[in-house]
Image (cartoon, rainbow, N blue to C red; front, top):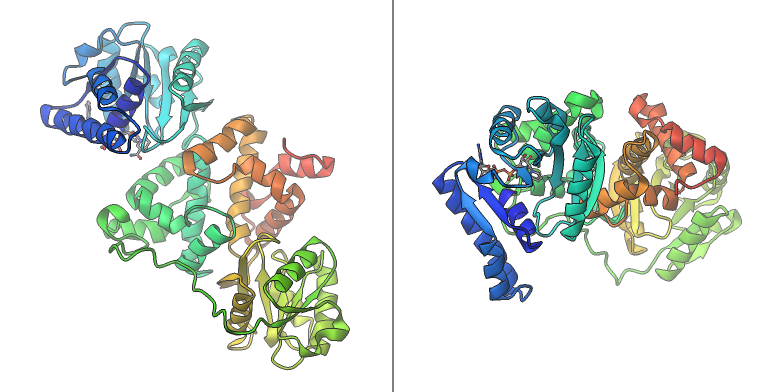
Length: 510
Ligand SMILES: NC(=O)c1ccc[n+]([C@@H]2O[C@H](COP(=O)([O-])OP(=O)(O)OC[C@H]3O[C@@H](n4cnc5c(N)ncnc54)[C@H](O)[C@@H]3O)[C@@H](O)[C@H]2O)c1
């Protein structure tokens, strides 16, 4: 990180002094800088002259007194509080009195570092993301002791480097890691509980929530030891059991399965490519006859999708006789149950009956019909999306969920399996994350733009959580969260007051 940050600063025309612990480490740093800028030259993004200028702006040294004239020092030593405190004591001694001292810590408290220096008003956090030359987000952390001018100077400098500075308070994980790791740990807990498989969870979050990577692929990329370290730090402050590292994570770290860097984490990385690509459905098999029951946007979207996929669509209970699959798309659970009961009476033997609501247990709906063995949950996290989550209940007859998945596949949908639990996979993982973001906003910890920038620029999300909440609908968020809360009784799943308030006021968050 140190070399990456030095490169960013030198690219911004600033003179940089890079300090390492010894000559060998200094040579490693020099090699890092040469390779990184060399790659930019090879890709035609930098001239050789430009590269020379950047490298010439960086003076490398093992002598801390060379930092004496610096306006700003950014510390990026390993993530240990004792070490950081020792380094800051040394910086405090050698740096000018008006110099601002910053830590690139990911998860330690900046205040903990600041209080042991003789200049706590000039200590800030500047959290770059890896790789620093590429990633646009920098979280700038002010403690309760930091003087406003120091924060403003650092944020202005970051913006001047072509990055986006997001200024926030000193809370473990800041914005991006706090939100991201709560979600990643919940995915690990979901795996641990047997709710769904690794591949189904990863596929669901890509195909259903539009994320570039599933949570297990991402944890393997970050490194499971780093994930564990960040979760421990966040949990130490939040005491939220959702941040207590899942045994599925800890067990792997103990076993040395650290992700890509060790060749094995949640996946085996043997160069054979990611095993979680969804299977292609057989285009030769004719599309099925589908009953789509209900009125409203979901029913319309499902009927339109089935029609586009070449399926024959029936929309009234009287026409269901030849349907292979009947999908109940009512707007509320009570209406859905009535439609399902009617469908169970008229659909042919062997037809699959599917319930779309993810907020009422499928089993409740199934037991109201005379043929619960034929009922599965079939949840479409995005009405016009391509993911179908299929949940079998304890009484779903053998083979019925397979048949549902095959039929959905023939309709061009990517399918994943899970148990009959609130939110299935996608909603169960994304709404608690969105709730956490809304709670941050409600607490005034960060603004809507800052929170959205943290997740898009820092974590590669296609859109930020506040924008996601407004797009998905706050009433839907509250409904799913209430269902999750009712099932788990975990207070962290209860909708944050800001959400409930905006639903009542019928106002989006922005
Ligand atoms: N790796 C990431 O993805 C990432 C992202 C954001 C922030 N961070 C944070 O950045 C910091 C550094 O992380 P990293 O991954 O680059 O670690 P690293 O272990 O790769 O590098 C740390 C460097 O600090 C040097 N060092 C150790 N003691 C020193 C001392 N007393 N004086 C000067 N240099 C010393 C080491 O020789 C090493 O080169 C940590 O606080 C980490 O949490 C890391």
